[in-house]
Length: 194
Image (cartoon, rainbow, N blue to C red; front, side, top):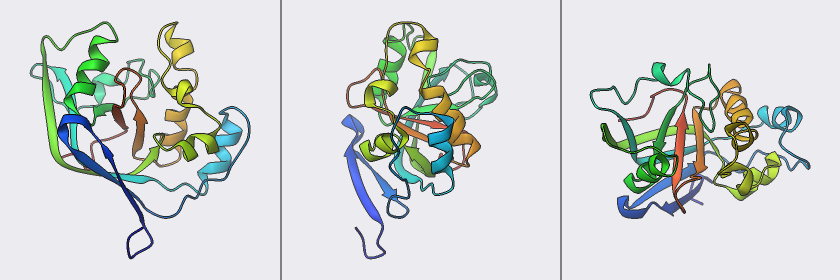
């Protein structure tokens, strides 16, 4: 804790170094039993406290594409964003970006990797925190499912994305399903990315 009572911690982010997440206040989540549901998530909404990401963000988009344009992702079926929602998917390092593409059957060929070095995005739902996952009634395995159908892989994560956006979070910070130790940020806008 710093002198203001804020929880500050750092997580190794591979070759890109360290980034810090600063907790705005002590955990405001209540412990709830059972699987993730609108009931559980709704009970947390009134007392939510997001974290802040400070550091470099990485994102790969088709050559010539605007890496901060959310419009073309609205129709996509993403881990935390269902079709119609849209989100900007970033990673905390280039290795995680590559793993997300390659392990999902794609490649970086024809794409440009962008880095945003002094980004500071606040009010993120922190799914890297085991206590937050416990409070929401979800496991690390729920968030990192691979294989099967997208409906099965995303049956827990897409409702979490809808919950986060509906309740005013700027986005989600979550463990990568494709890169061991990787961290992804799914943002509902580009505020704070620079």
